[in-house]
Amino acid sequence: MSHSPIDIDHFLDVIADFVKDKQVPVVDLIAVQTKDPFKVLVATILSARTKDETTAVASAKLFQKAESPEELATLSETELEKLIHPVGFFRNKAKYLSQLPEALKAFKGKVPETIEELITLPGVGRKTANLVRSVAFNKPAICVDTHVHRIMNIWRYVETDTPLKTEMALRNTLPEKHWIPVNSLLVAFGQSLCKPVGPQCDICPLEKLCPQLGVTPRRKTATANNKNANATPGLRLISWNVNGIRAMEKKGFTDTVIQLNADVLALQETKAQPDQLSENLKTIAGYTSYWHSAEKKGYSGVAIYSKSEPLRIITGIGNDLYDREGRVITAEFETFYLINIYFPNAGEGLKRLDYKISFNIELHKFANTLGEEKPVILCGDFNVAHKEIDLKNPKNNIKNAGYTPEEREWMDSFIDSGYTDTFRMFNQEPDQYTWWSYRFNSRAKNIGWRIDYFCVDSQAVNNVTDAKILQEMMGSDHCPVLLEYTPSANNQR
Ligand code: SF4
Image (cartoon, rainbow, N blue to C red; front, side, top):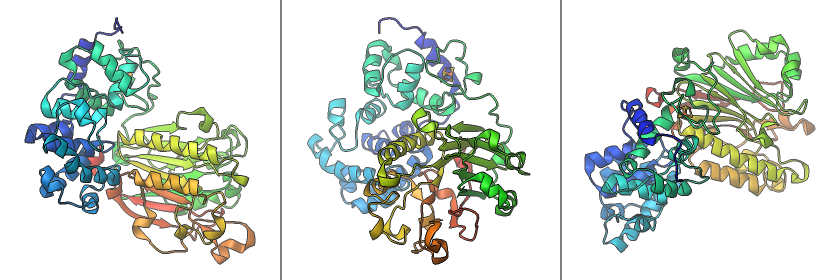
């Protein structure tokens, strides 16, 4: 790019001023404290897709056992997994760390300085390599992560479609004095104000100058007035596929809501357009309700009832292919995101299996993006029984929707990436189901499937205090599932 439409020196000055009171990214902190490239490298590997606080704790635990490649080589992969849990992707990262001492032998046991050498190490891509080079060695390098790539494009300072292309473009255009600090600045700015979903342009010091390319700013109704309500400890979160909210209303749904006494109640398969909802349904005493309906009448649909007003509601995942089916509604609270999802059914003859898997992949990315800001809780009808223990007749259902290898493999990959199925934290028993066919008297015989879940990311898992299936609650072919969650103060950003 030969000509820049913005004054980058001024933009980065403004941001440096804005973020000066924000926390120093953990990797920079470790570099300042230890001046040790090995520790910076290890902390950088641990920090991907993980909150700084979690990285700091995991790094400290690991460095107590291993301060050098030689000491790291004495730890098994299983020991490493235990030490670094709950950082995101902890299994993959444990594998990389166990391979690291051997790989470093090619560099006489020392961390190399060049990008080309660094990217030969296990688990080290260009982003990590650039970060290590700039932070540990103070050498010119531009670490382009998702925030740098995104914000530089919003500013039209680069026009690129991948972080690698952004890095190459910045090498040509960005004055060298900004190369090292730009990552820390834009990460802090991207996490606090210019967020990936709903940036807070209305209070941004750059609002008048920023081209805001491709940006949908947050709605200004999002306020922080409810901080105290949102920070209530010991929250009772309930998820329920109601299989038709209007049919449930006839069975006394409003009384059931009072009886459930959830702080947040997430519903799936509401099967109603906004104009089909009675005032009774929309305004249950003590709750505010939020709805996302499918374009097709009487199909799909999700809703959230909340005692405290969320900071923000997001409908869909930003992709019309899925959003027109009304499958996802997200509430942002002070200390976490709650994503309420009605996953597609793979359908008769598995006709919608491909659609379902592509939805799952996009939803996973959406959750990861929100997780860059604060802890994420996902709930809903996942429409898959993950393991044999999660349905009555696994052998007979291998080719059926909800238990195909493809759907279960996606669930494996989701869990392996750092999310936890909270029910199995507390209960390892068989015969624990959340859905029963209306046919063959299945519920009375407990011939069922566990397909409704509360899953949490690695930042939220330590705040989970209980998870249960509320099998006694009738009215739908699903029963509700419960999560007790106590947000900790250090989850607040
Ligand atoms: S105006 Fe909006 S898009 Fe531009 S930098 Fe500020 S928050 Fe980001």
